[in-house]
Image (cartoon, rainbow, N blue to C red; front, side):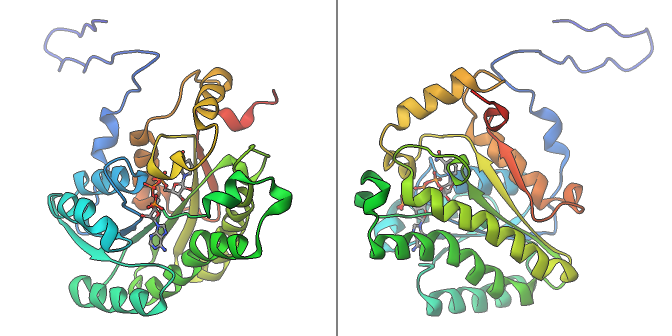
Length: 283
Ligand code: 0WD
């Protein structure tokens, strides 16, 4: 599509309208220069956390990016240190000592923190596959410890460093609200996560620290592989969502940049959907 402009006036930038490729260029203007962020949950290059880290880095943020353990170190570490303005750290969020030592290091390195991204979830495969009625006590505890309590623990550790206010965000899924076969205990954990976002928003609001969740549509990642019937979920999403397609991980990262930026200072306690509108549909 061509645009025309009057002689002597600067030519308007052509905007391509496409039903498949979203218009993205205008988001580049959001600047995170001078801001420090910590991103949790990079397992590999497909991780949502990795797309968010890349977006924050492009916008100029200084980044600490964490991976869980030695097993993930090989792949995650090299990727992270190759990213502009990023340092890699190991942190298993089930270990208070690792959280404490990470934040002590962040205090030394950054002084203050502006953004925290929590992109972590886990439930034992047996518990996700089983009939929900048969959820084990151990699986229930583990899913809630790793996928929910970790947000509270990380928010508490970050608060003293967010002395100019800040933005905390987590990743959730629609299975928190409606039954998704084979999401099971993770759906219950996501419901608790979304409620925790609201309670944390209330707790941290007086310090101008905002807490929000992004509810993403299904995206092929390592975690997604643990969900039986994931391909059908992708298809149902694309068929039923108003946008008639799946979401791209970059669209989730754009929403994360918005939540991290000064463009969202009035928003807290919310679950923001990046799902092509799937959640509004009644059939
Ligand atoms: O369709 C999807 N992929 C969606 C994901 C749709 C909507 C929401 N989400 C959520 C997930 O539930 C999760 O909260 O997004 C978040 C990120 O998930 P992801 O990017 O899809 O998956 P992945 O790349 O696997 O990252 C999750 C990572 C873990 O990966 P693995 O697969 O190794 O369990 O969470 C991390 C780990 O790197 N993680 C931990 N990090 C620190 N300490 C721990 C832990 N104890 N346990 C898991």
